[in-house]
Image 1: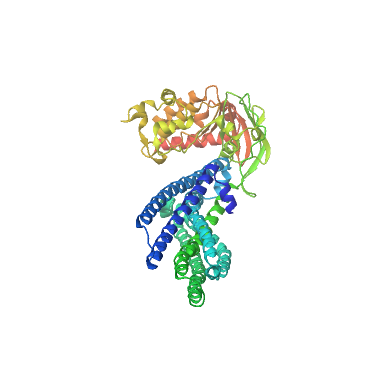
Image 2 (image 1 turned 90 degrees about the vertical axis):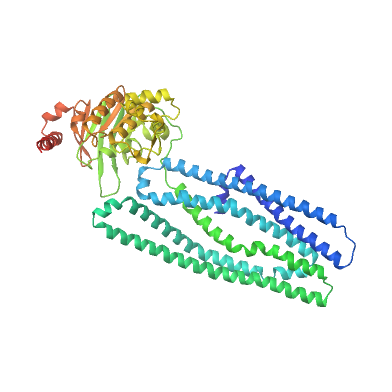
Length: 575
């Protein structure tokens, strides 16, 4: 796992991390050198030897400056290394998420993905660059000091490390047993966060229905599971680290006892004894800090496990030799698809959208209209048959290239916390202000935008807070104009707007549809009377195809849908 973590870093990030480790090691060794310099001065004073204090003062000043410089440079290097690995992983996740099918997002809840991107990536960034750099430098320092102390007196050296193997074996055993508990705790945390996100988003609905108490029960149980698993892992940590710390501390006790014996019975000098008792504390430093290193290891490996699960999730396959269409007619050839076995199924969908025409999909809710557009966008892939644009199977096209050829205007418009211009530029990030204005004029939204105090620089709240449904729709249409794609998908965009906005939207759509292949999902049949082709779906099957006048002459589903809408309209007018 650690190898995979380092493979996620760029060469620059690895260089900066290694640089910070070396600099932190020099920082620590310079501190030890200061101690040795002072001990040497004290030794000579005790022995009555002549000393030049200015040399010691100069040496201390040089070491202090050097130590401070190493610390500052190492701290800067570790932060940049942390930014590198965090940015690299986030980029990989964001690029990967773009390649997932829409089906992925129905199984992986938004709260869990959010936890991975925010908490887990931050864990990896903080621990690997900021904490492991210190850990590695501490062990490098211990290695250098250990060699030096063994050279001074190998017997004292053996006493210094006597019980460390036992302590380390106990820690390794604790790490193995703690991994399963940490995984359980983090999974319970992700589940609890997901439920909290769902709960907060659904409070208005839950308050209106009796389901509220049922959801609260689920949330309470999830919170309790997380609490219980947290207690288990805390107990495991306490036991493991308690045993480990005991043996590390006993090492120093053994060193002090053996040193006293050698001083009394052999030729071990007072100075060497002091060197061991003082400098050994620096040697033990990384071993004493293993409590933090252990917890960081468990945390980072568990966080990276979830990151890998996200990065390794199946994606939409890209062709090795992608093809590009020269025309933009669309063919559904015996397309079959289902989300889950035993549920809704699209059966043998076979129809053509001629280039430059407008085709409408109509039918009752759940009949397959949205599924058709999802398959065209490759949010899912067909299980049977094929979809072709310009005679080319869309699975043999580059996915980004496919999406570049399609503009989408949805019923529920998604606006971001940005300016109006920023939201329109999603259609074309390189567009100029002049091009944005032209697109807005075609979308019948320019006059409204310039009436605002800040015009196109007016901030828009998340999801378009402060804008009406019709205004959001026309901003979405402006995006489509700016993108200028040859294929346009419209998902019943006038169903929730007032008559004034509906008229403006219809006018904008008529302009947008010119010389483009347009696919419309329609619920209000009056809006698609002039469509070049109307395809009627029912329970996943095409039951009628034709133009409005011809379908109205048939005694079929389209006629019944039309009549029911007209009756509903007359009833609303009379009441």
